[in-house]
Amino acid sequence: MLTVSLSYSGHALLLRQSTIAPTITGLRGRAPDCSLKSGALPPGLMLNRDCSITGTPLAAGSFPIVVNLGASGVANELGWSVSALVLGPSVTYSLPASMMTGASYDFTTLNNFWIATAADTVTYSVSEGSLPSGLVIDPGTGRITGTPAVEGDYSFKVTAQVVNAGRIATATSRWPESVTVNRPVIPYSQAQAWAGLPFRSTPTLPSGSVAYTFSATSLPAGLSIDPATGVISGMPLEPAFSADYRIELVGTTAGGGTFANFTNVSIDVESPVYIRYAGTVGRVDSPMSDMPVIVNNSGVQLTGISYSYALDDPSSLPLGLSLDPITGEISGTPRVVSGRPVRINVTVTINGISFVVPVDTVVSVQI
Image (cartoon, rainbow, N blue to C red; front, side, top):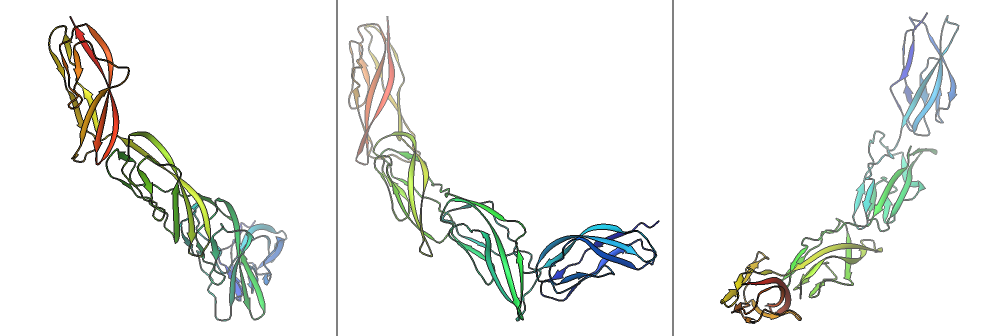
């Protein structure tokens, strides 16, 4: 009884006279006798009785076959599932699963084990599916470059055709390349703004040869967007709740193609000062005073800032107390017991911009 094995570890080269030698063990000196049981070798290659595969292949790839292995003086045969590997111009790439519109990409072929000679003319093309809109393939090198312009899912195969002395051979991607093109993620440098103080937020754009035009249908009052750079700047006129603002982009690629997209930027506008009252507890017929406490929220030195104070309608102070419109002091001699909530509107003026900060407090008067 013989324990044998058959395998192939070598490869053939497209349009080159090649030999793929077998590795056979266990025949104990007997001559092998091979035949093709199933599958097909690429055009130009043949399986010999000594199990070698020889010839000049006209197609590249991995070709699964089943080889019957017999031996001199042995009646039975064994079938071996093996593959004949033919290397040609590389059609293998390392592509990301996700791309962004507006970003530039440059992909070269990988695993270039087959080298063209002066007698070879190699032409690359997309043979199945399509590249993302905005990308192109160099027919001479297979290099894929460009700037995607349209979102979507794309799948494609690449074929390299080789012509040499009238012979035509091909290599095609074994599996499709699949990529998804998404709208760009464009972060802005600053989200926090202060009413009455200069604000500037700069976008970080995808790395690519694209000229953008920016626009925004709405931004916090006092801010505007530079249509050429996308920079948002100005002085906010009043505090506003944090919100997302849609920025429209029209990109023009180096090749002259245009595409439209958008991104969202979050901007929070707050008062640069926080104002509160200590909430002093007074007593009937005893003088009392409560001064506002002002805290700088902005982290920058505030100069030329002024305040004016007024009771919000319908708020009122207990009998005997009054509000100083310049200092904001609540003072006087209360005449009645009270624990009422009071809202005071503080008008803050800085850099020529005035806005109102409502301040809620409780005026407590006990017996």
